[in-house]
Amino acid sequence: MVEHSYNFYCDEEVNSILEEDEMMHICSYVLQDQQVKRPCNVSISIVTDEHIHTLNKTWRNQDRPTDVISLECERPDDPDLANGEVCELGDIVLAPNYIAHQADSFHMAHEDECRLLLIHGMLHLLGYDHLTDDEAEVMEALEDRLLLEVGTTRHVGHVTLTRHRGEE
Image 1 (spheres, one colour):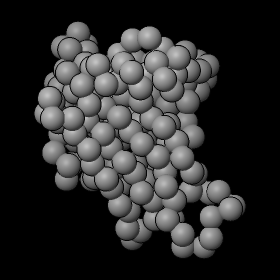
Image 2 (cartoon, rainbow, N blue to C red):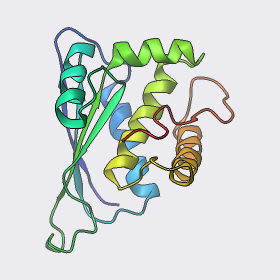
Image 3 (cartoon, rainbow, N blue to C red):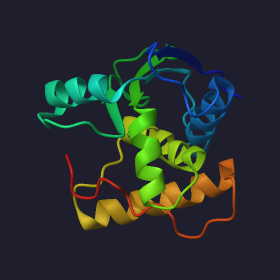
C-alpha cells in the first residue's frame, strides 16, 4: 500500500469538525479508490470564514467566503516526476463555520458535510471538475459513492448535488 503524508494547519479561532486521523483516512481512501500509485503529500488547512474569503478573492477572484478551496500543485501522473518521487498534490482549505451553516441549510450533519467537502477537494486535486453538467454528474456520483463508503453519521441517499455546480 502506498504511504501518503499530510500537513495540517488550523487557525486559532476555529475548531475542526473532523479529527486529523479521520481526514487522513478519507484522503487516503480517495487516493486508493482513484488508484494513485505514487506517494502524495496533501496539506489541509482549517480556517476562519474571513481567511477563506481572502483566499477565495485572491485565488478565484470570488469576493465572498466559501466552504472549500482546492489548490492543485502536481498531478500524480505528471511525467516530470521521477519514479517513486513524492507528488505534492496540493492544498485543501476548509472553513468549518461556513460548512456548519451550509450543513444546516441542507439538513446534513456537520461531519457529513465536512466529509463530503474533503472528498470534493481531493477530487479537484486529482483533476475532477464541475464546470459543465456532464462533469458535475460524474463528480457528484463519485462523491456520493465515496461518502457512503467512508461512512456517514446517518443513512443518506443521494446527498451531494455538488454545492459548486457551474462554479470555477
